[in-house]
Amino acid sequence: MKGKCVYVYRGEIEAAHYMTGVSSESGVHGHTWRIHVHVKEVEDLDKFRRDMEAILSRFDGEMLGDMGPRELAEKIFELASVLYPVVKVVVYMGRHLGVQVKGK
Image 1 (cartoon, one colour):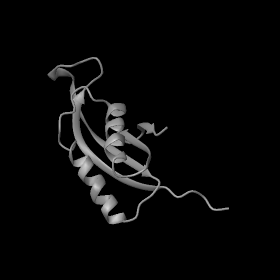
Image 2 (tube, one colour):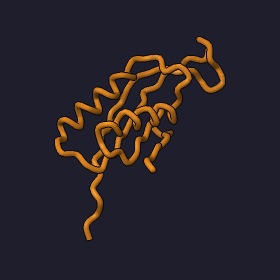
Image 3 (tube, one colour):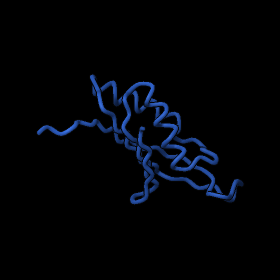
C-alpha cells in the first residue's frame, strides 16, 4: 500500500508582536518563528520554495502587532492556498511550542 505524499516547506522569520493582552511598547517581544507549510501537490520544487520564501518575506523583520502564532499560521495558510493545495501550516515560537492550522 502506498502512503500519501505531502510536500513540506520549512522556513523561518524574525518578527516581533505584542504579548497577549498587552498592546503597548512594553509588551513587544520578538521570536524566531519557524514555519512549516504542508501541501498535497507540487510540480516544481524550486518554484514551491521560491513561492513560500516570497510569502514568508512579507512577515520577516516586521512588527506583527496583535498577530499571534495562530493568526500568523492562518494568514500564511490563506496566502499559500492561492498557489497550492495546502494541507496545514505549523508555526513554532521557539523550539518546542507551535500552532497548527489545517484545511477543511
